[in-house]
Length: 307
Image (cartoon, rainbow, N blue to C red; front, side, top):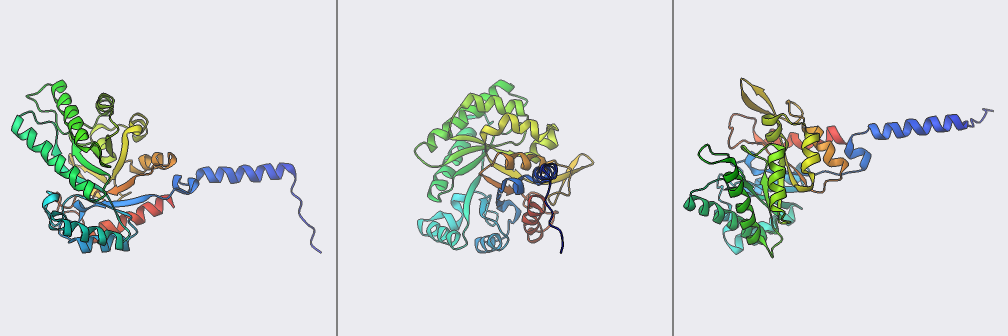
């Protein structure tokens, strides 16, 4: 008869320690049983119609869609699927059928302009997107900061951006829509972003953290960025790239130089509830891989790393 094994107290403690060590060595999502919510921007599939977009998203494990143009119509209130009440109802029915959610509307509203007529046009565009988002039960619209023009002082431009955000937030008051400023253009340094967010202090205003936009310009570690900005982050843009001859070449996730997963691990450990939205910039960079390949790869890359 085989003798029974009775572990000593030392064996028990050692085994428990190994188990705990192993647990903490697991990727962030696995250790915390955190399930990421995935979306992609329609910037990545500029020629697909809405039926193809939603069918592909559902088939590849996405839960949300970030709308940045439909068949190259960037002014979303003019897109046929959104233009009329009947069109919006049909669109929402299609989203429900595919068990998808709208997670953001990407406007082109840019807030650094000083010239009165151009500035007013930008703000009116932002307001139209807020109205559309409310009709679509979409929580966010995206706006740009965007540049520090040479003919304006930094302080003047920061004030223009701040006041623009506040005006849009006031328009969104009473709705369920929030105005998110993307970390984009010249406004990608953590100190500048924190200064601006602290100045506006508005629950209707937050940030889209584009890890790549920031790191490829500033080189600031995501761990430092996140520590300073995490209270403002509502949505995250994910993309990877390599620098070649002073230019960026976009790659599939994990094949570039951007420390994307460092940022995503931090979000996971804090149980970030928003979406990780893949931004494959096919519309702006037609030479990069086709959406069928890129948008299919992203959920697999996330799964491989975290699960």
